[in-house]
Length: 74
View 1 (cartoon, rainbow, N blue to C red):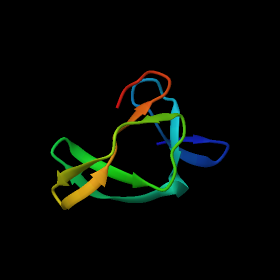
View 2: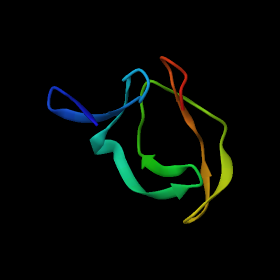
View 3: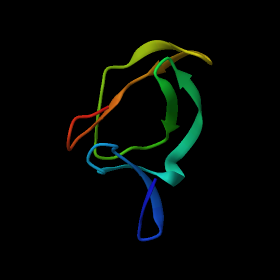
View 4: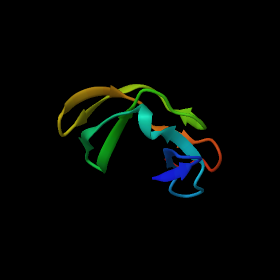
């Protein structure tokens, strides 16, 4: 997690583009087959993928992958 002017935020692993403020994090208690899945109330600098029902370890949820608007990484 990075910090800009005292506001911690989540950033893209590849290019460090800011994606979501820490205050917009709702939960880190979700797990997908690929690992941790976070829920945010708001994100920025992202392209939102198609909504789909996906079975996570904690149940079936309607989710969408997000991609960095700068480099396109998930």
